[in-house]
Length: 316
Image 1: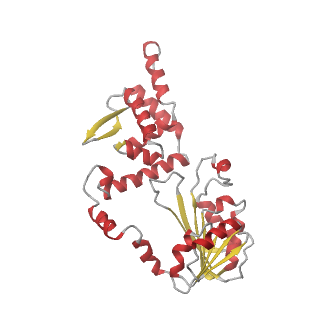
Image 2: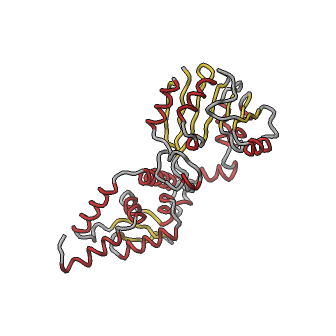
Image 3: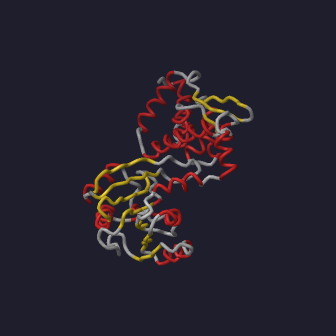
């Protein structure tokens, strides 16, 4: 880049690219033309914040805007930028690298684009979601999940470990023989008792997950949902769960993928900032559990938290 007359332009470029939110916006716009609402959902930012950053990028010539109906759509303005500005952006992207925040931006964007294809209301009346909308209008949102739960073996004994207020147990109770809800917090168990008062096949036990109040080989399915990031030694918990699983019993874990929201340690008491797939597989090896399956869950673009994964493993 040249000095002298071009220095003011360089300073303006640097000022524009000095904000991480604007860099995240530019990354996503390189992948597809997007509206303010779509960007807000993919980035988990308020629309007002996204609009403010888009104005800065638009005024600086980094992006272009077009209208479709009453909506405004944004895309990169590479054809207007000079070679020096493009070189600066490419260098900036290289320095950004790959971080959990950017990976989760990409995952949420993929979900936003998928919703665009199937939900006509979500993308300015474009064709595509009429049948899904009709089904929702007639039958609501829950029937698919509830019907699929009938695939569970009706004689299963399930342990909901770190059960909290019992939302998972409430969903499963009609479909299995017995649920044992375990939590170390008396207040959580009391809330779960109230929630599940209508079920006769739910038993409540107070206990720590690294020392379960359960007999050896007594559990067909163990659930640990959004709990392990609170535990200092998750591997020890997985080993203990292996003890109580029946032969061919299954452990199902739902938790956060690795992320960099350091504030969660202080605001919510998280010990771990999510988990990588390799970490989960290492737990299984230490516990002697086999048939490990790990999958990132589709992000809910209305959610504000990090991405989630589901992992299953079986006792050999």
